[in-house]
Image (cartoon, rainbow, N blue to C red; front, side):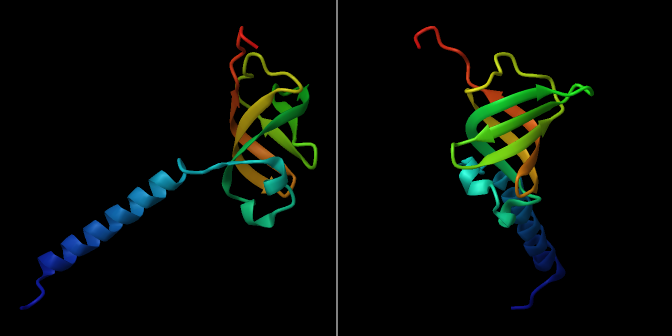
Length: 121
């Protein structure tokens, strides 16, 4: 049985499709990490992470961006966010910051997810 050019092309297309599907879905499978897991850990630098922890401080800068400190009581990471400020964002609240780690203790967030307040709490 001879391998024809069509078989090789089909194999290459299937392999490329599998690679692109894997690459597309890995960004959605990122687990929530804590500040202690990320802070000081060089393996996350340049990678997109989702950090779920407590807001220690919130500062609005002159350019309209937010500067947040996230903490879990053991470590702290500074988060810079340039999007629209989420409603209900305050100190002591748990949030999810999604973005890339630029240094062991700094993150540029592309999204901030704030827990909705509940009237039952």
